[in-house]
Amino acid sequence: MSETGGRARPPRKPKRNQLPVGLIVFALMIAAGVLLSVYRSGALAMAWVFGGCFGFILQKSRFCFTASMRDPCITGSTSVTKAVLMAFAITTIGFTAIKYAAFASGQEIPGQSYVMPVSLATAAGGILFGIGMVIAGGCASGTLMRVGEGFGMQMLSLLFFVIGSLWGAKDMGWWNLNVIAGAPRVFLPDVFGWFGAVVIQLLIIACLYVAADLWERKKMGITE
Amino acid sequence: MAEFELDCLGEACPVPLMKTEKKMAGLKSGDTLIVHIDHSCAMKNVPEWARKQGHNVEVEEVGDGEWDVIIEKC
Amino acid sequence: MKQFFDKISKNRYYAMVFKNPFTYVTGAVLLSLFQIALFAYSGNPWGVSGAFANWGAWIYRLFGGNVDKWYYFSSSGAQQTLDAGVLNNSGSLMNFGIAAGALLATLLASQFKFKKIKSIKQVVAAVLGGLIMGYGARLAGGCNIGALFSSIASLSLSGWVFALFLLVGAFIGSKLLAKFFL
Image (cartoon, rainbow over the protein chains, first blue to last red):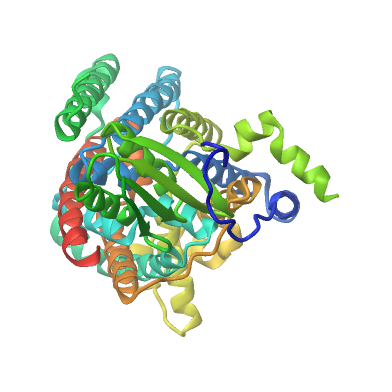
């Protein structure tokens, strides 16, 4: 980002330093966390804290899962795609370490509810969500982030995300009965063993990374 | 060496980028395009796109949450 | 007083952390670290859209509706969650936190600006996009975080299947965007 050196632009509205307001907001956030831990529980306060950290990181890096899938389609840029793939790789290693530690010591493996059934509902949900996130200008985390940034459009999008979720929840009885029931939950270590699953997944991520890089070079005409 | 302006204030992701791409296609080498944006994503993805295309880019913060992306077509 | 704040804002370390944006890679690394930390701490990875269904149920109840006979909310766990209310729901608090964290980040960088809805196109896009995101997330069991980021990290095949179809949807969405919403 350059300073205003050299360019004779007409002066715009005066910039206000928002740091004082930011500090007040920060203080309120801390207060909310303290109140939660005192009147509810430490775990709930930590949920608030983690959320705050996620939101802060998302905003500062303008990290957007929507962009990771959309930009390759519109400009051919895959810089966000590659960053998302990196996140997949790092979290794969971290999550597997935690899961394997539990498994190896005979405990119940945590987080297995996130190994979801694979069915036509997964495919239909994916397509719907993919269309929706591109049109609405943000995915789930992106919408929340933009609400915090002051985007009126995403506030509206969030409202209808909630309504759509309720509608989806209502229909889940039908979907579960007719599409999802009996669908397999495939935990890759069950198929390839723990070591095999991690290696294969990381290899796939690496291949996708190279593919993303090649795609961008081709689409954007980068030759160096 | 013509100078053009593109107002993308209030546009949602990725409209500033798409409009910039379209507009830049119609410019001649040496022309300058000034894109007015207030979207934090655009303040990153528009300059990134322009640089990858080989143009000179400058980003100026002109207000709270408002930027001018100045692209000189190469 | 104003000079004091201005001085802080111009400090190079302040600029590095609070003013300037992070790179996508930095974001990826940090998000991953916090994802792993959350999983280690709570036993569950990050999820965003599950809470939205609860918000829908609570709002529906405010209007006199009842979701207790629905399959989706029929489990005792789901009933307990709904009865305990939003301030006892970790998913909801985490979502509020995301919005708050983003707000804080913007303010500390002095980049906050309220952006009003500009056109009918944006209204249609937000309404339609939001609706199908919400519906799609329930079908797939989660959103870009729960059914994609967390599921892939959890070595679940569903995460990859979801990713593939997200890409298909994003492609379709991009075409629609260019045609109708530009």
